[in-house]
Amino acid sequence: MSTAKRDPNKSKTGKAPTFQIRITPELKAQFEEAAKAEGMSLGNWLKNLGRKQLSRSGVEPKG
Image (cartoon, rainbow, N blue to C red; front, side, top):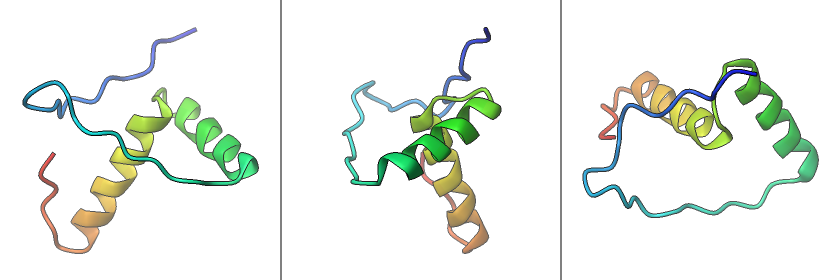
């Protein structure tokens, strides 16, 4: 079993605020499966997805 990749864009203070969303258990399971396939935690997978979308929209991600 491999370890999930860590996010290289650490918070400056080490205490970034949490973000909560409500999604169906089925969608969460799909997200978790996709994250696992890329060797990432669900949180890091979602952050990477958000960063990619910002970049595609012409916005430079700040973290």
